[in-house]
Image 1 (tube, rainbow, N blue to C red):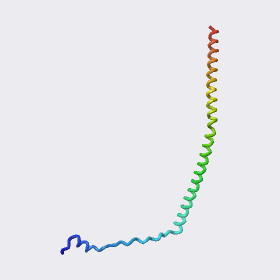
Image 2: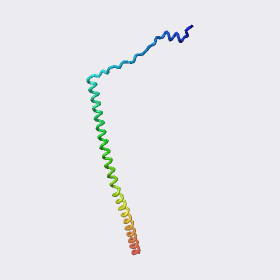
Image 3: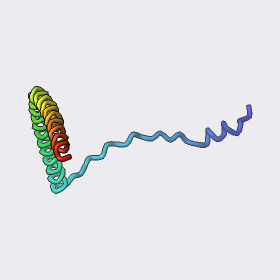
Image 4: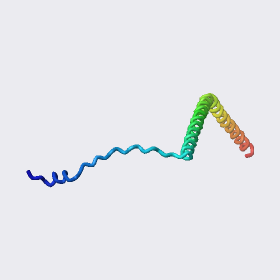
Length: 108
């Protein structure tokens, strides 16, 4: 049989099997390792500080919410007081206007 173009090309090209790359050992100097260790230490401290800050913020939020809930009755009381004072002011204004009208009537 005659060989086709593809078959002849396959025969001529040797199979190249790539070997898996061997893991290279990380060569870290003592300074590099110390710098990495320091960066990790700083990151851990940062995480600790942030967690503590979050706990403190949550505690403040709970305290503020409790204070807000405790202020509800006081707010209602103050609203009622303001309404009463406005009604009293309107009543006094009407009385003053009536007195001024009586004074105007006397001057005529």
